[in-house]
Length: 374
Image 1 (tube, one colour):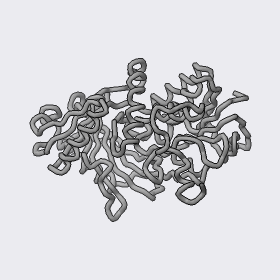
Image 2 (image 1 turned 120 degrees about the vertical axis):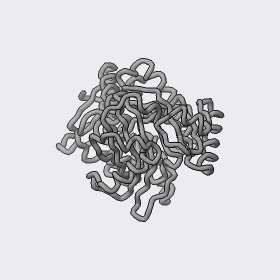
Image 3 (image 1 turned 90 degrees about the vertical axis):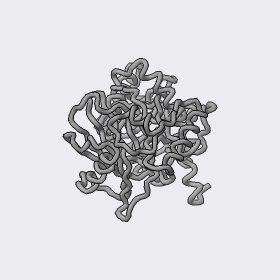
Image 4 (image 1 turned 180 degrees about the vertical axis):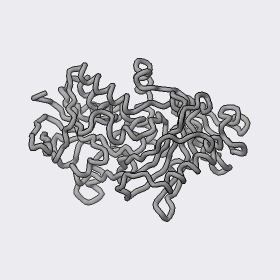
């Protein structure tokens, strides 16, 4: 493509979703990536479609996107390897159960099915869990997908709509309406969208996106032995220890019968190598909820770098000082869930149209305000 109207940098699931949405609205889109669709962070993630509600704006974006996911998987679920397994938010004590009950109420008020389960109901719903748990919230509409497959399919959709994807395209820097590749080639467009994950800050230094390392492991195939995605109520709330490591169990059933195991958070770690001590902590946390896991065969372990923002919210919208430059970055562990909602929000903002949800919490301008550059 020689004359794109929009260049999207980053063909992970967020960037690919943005490219398709913009192309579908009549823009001529060129999608750039140095690895290809679904590489990088998207290839390392768990693929959980989950309604998170740590804040009202987080839930707004999740629900906006999950309803679009429903439409996508109705048509392309086989391509996405989608399973609507639901999520069990497991409470290990009465304090966590109070938080679980509040979560069920918040989701139910927004029309998202969430039921509080007693210990007996929980045992019947997921026999693999250990006895003695206080209860859980079951969020039935949640599911799982295989993110790299979705990103590749979105790139195919982009091509079918008349757009293009270019791989082996490492970006050196950007200017207003201009992308400079490391080869020295210059690409011009009316708008540039930066959906570059952890590489965002290298291109736009005033946008604070940093890598948050996670460890994952996957078992051999054990069909039918895990029914739901099982997540500790401590997920996202567990404080980091003195070593900067926070761990909370997150175990996902894959359509193959494999168990995909996380989760942990480490900041300030640039090394992508698997740390055996950290992996052991992740596995211990999961086994504490699902004792059967101790008898299963782990066949692979790896790490991923989640692109986290300084305040924990995605960065979606116009760059505050660089004209014709837009962002869709900093989603951390919610990039898969919120990809379609992010694409809709960004496309509405780029078109100057009213947005389906309040875009202000995601505005890139919030960071320049914080450092006194109104």
